[in-house]
Length: 200
Ligand code: ZN
Image (cartoon, rainbow, N blue to C red; front, side, top):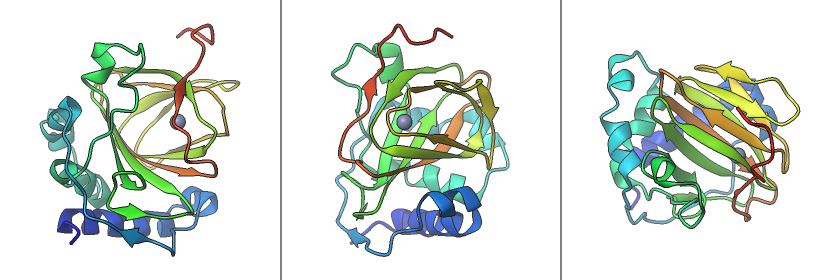
């Protein structure tokens, strides 16, 4: 039995794919979804998201609200736990899977995540073989992509990352809440890019 909060979130994601040309073009919403019960697992960022004053005080979309509402019933990820990324990042960066590993839903076509970062957090350069699309649901962040000028993206804007293209992200006075999808080669985890790559 899938938690109603996740059913609602899935419905919002489906609507977003239908209504956002960049998402629709990147990957049609999967037709092959299966579901499995989730074992909830919390990390410190879950509480930061739940109690984020800026998100709570802002007018946010139904998709953003559903992403926050699902926080207590999802399995939060610890993708960078065994790296040298540092305690500051591990204690504040949040990501959970909606479609994919430890998520409620599974597809052979794509993975879908929700990413949350509080204000004033730097997500260092990283890359992965999967192609990636971010859709900003609330707040904003500065997106950096190797070979491109940095760009501050807000609600409704998207960022595409090609296969193995290093990218980084930084929040300043706003948090960011984003819907993130992967296609192709999505079984391989992100790795931190050689630290010699661009400094901020
Ligand atoms: Zn990425």
